[in-house]
Image 1 (cartoon, rainbow, N blue to C red):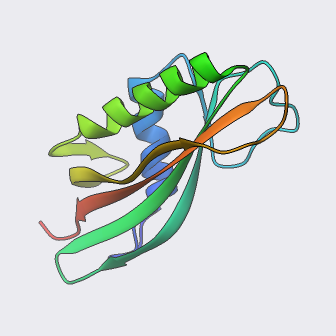
Image 2: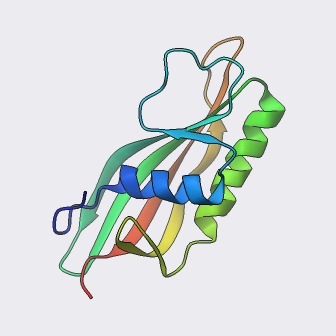
Length: 127
């Protein structure tokens, strides 16, 4: 739940990805076993806010069994965020989402491939 200008961006992002990518498991905490699954993990990163706008950032980790499906999942996640403009999720109006760093490969294990990207969300905090 958001409090004033501090937006629960993890909750908002879970709502966005659950809506736009219903076939993908979306979490903020990884399950114990992730092998063989496609998972998007959302983690809040540093951001900022002012009297009208909150600009939280998120790290979006995409996990998959192989590199091809990892890149496909990263692309779907990137596209889902790029489509947002004036949409409302979790009670918040999302003006836009900016890619800070494109998805990059980040080693996890021999049986799990992972990409990481950083996004800045521009969210209206006044009516």
